[in-house]
Image 1 (cartoon, chains in turn purple, yellow):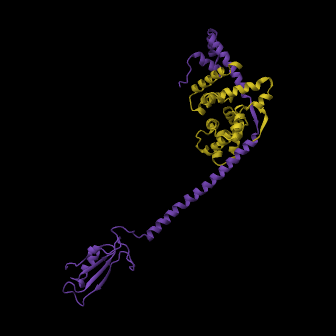
Image 2: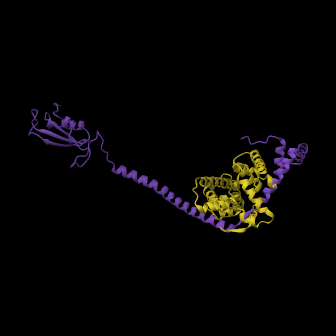
Image 3: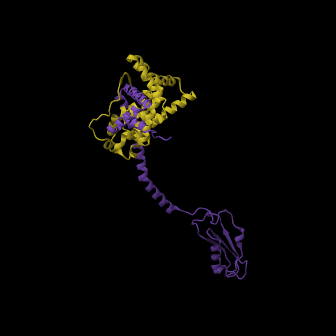
Length: 200
Length: 204
C-alpha cells in the first residue's frame, strides 16, 4: 500500500490534527478549507473524531501498579536465578572441558593400541607384546641339508613379510619349511602364507 | 493484580529526575535488578495502557505486559541504543499485544476457548460495561463505541493511532516502534481518523 497523502490539504490537515503545523501552513490550510466545502466538512468531522479519541483516552481502569511491578520483578528474579545457574554450569564446563580434553588426549597417547583393521592382525592369545614375532624351532641338530628337515614356526602379528624375513635370516633354518602362522583381523591362520621358502 | 472500579488517566511519563534509561539499562546488563525494577516502574503505566488500548481488556493487557517486561529483561543485552529503551519496550509490547489478539481471535473462531475465557473475552470486548453504567451523561456508551471502532481498525492504523494520538508517543518513536517511516505513521494515523469518522458518524 502506498502510504502517502494524495492531496496537499490532506497532508496539512493531518499536520494540524497532529499538532505539528506552523503558522504559514495553517494559513494555507485555512485558505484551502475556505475554498472547498467538502474539505471543510471533512476537517470538522475529523476534529470531532479527535476529540472523541482524546475523551476515550482518559479511560483506563485503575490498576495496582505496585502489585504489577512486584509480579514482574518476581518473574525477572526467577529468570535471573535461572541465568546465574546456567552461567555457573557454563563456567564450570568452560574451565573443566580443556582439562578433560587434555586428560583424554594424554590417556589416549599412553594407552593407545591400534585397533583391529583388515590388514592388521589381532593380538594372539598368550603373546604378550603386540607386534612381536615369535619364532618356534623344530630345528635339526645341524643346518638342514634338505628341505623338510625340521621346520620353523613363525607366529607374527604385524606382517607376513616380516615373518618370512625372520625365517630367511635364520641361518639355522636354511631350506627348512617355514610355517608362517599369521594371526589376522579375521582371526584365522591364512593358509596362503604357509609355504616352503626357497633357499636363501 | 487488583483492578479498582474507578478510573485514572495513564498520565505522562514520570519525570522523577532519576538516572537516564541508558544508565539503567547498562546497570541491568551488569546484573543490577534494582535498575530494571526502576525501568519497570518508569514504563509500566504506558506499556499497560497501550496494550489495553490494543486489546480492550486490562487483565489481558497486564498479562501481556508482564511477559513483555520479562522478554525485555531476557534480551536487554542486545539493545544497542540503550537510551532508546522506551520505544524498544513498546515495540515488544505492541508485537505481543497483536500476537495475543490474533491468537485470541483464532481460538475464539476455533471454539477452543474455555467458557470462563469466553465470558472474560466477552467482558473484554465491552470493557466499559460497568463503567458505562457508572458514567454520567452517556459518556460511557460513547467510550464503548470508540473502543469498539478502534478495535476494528487494521493493525497498523490501530497501533499508529493508539501510540501517537492516545498514548502520546512522538511520531519519530512510533515510526521506530512500527518499523516504518515518519510519513507512513502520519498517513496511518490520518487514515485511522478517517475510518473512525465513518464508524462514529451517528455519534458525532
